Image 1 (cartoon, one colour):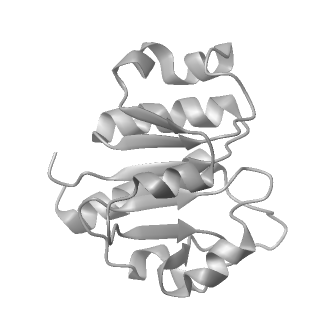
Image 2 (cartoon, one colour; image 1 turned 60 degrees about the horizontal axis):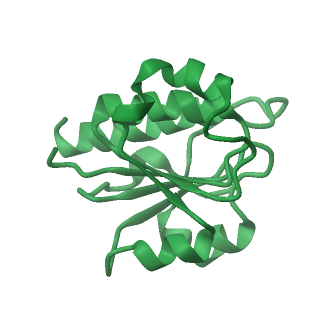
Length: 154
């Protein structure tokens, strides 16, 4: 696939979200990167139920921690950091083939130091009601992947 998108989940906690994201990655031929520690086991039935019988076909890479993940990045890899604390909208960013779409854990999001270190590539999906703490991780990943695909010409 010419887009070569990478979805990176930093310390995901909810197996059903990861399963749904894995299914999305397979459908869009994107690579899923799981940065440990994970809040579940890959054998978790909720992960398998959400990923159905697709998990074995998924291009998934596990990384022992954030530093191990960073060591695998190609030089000048385009990294986009998704956070509700970012200033720039996800749709304003210009995605490139081979982009790494990076998402934080469900309960805390990305560490603020990552967002602050990359203000030009930190983006958010808008929310209009402050009573909603955050959007579901699998929903945000879907929005992000399909915006990148739209820009890259599907």
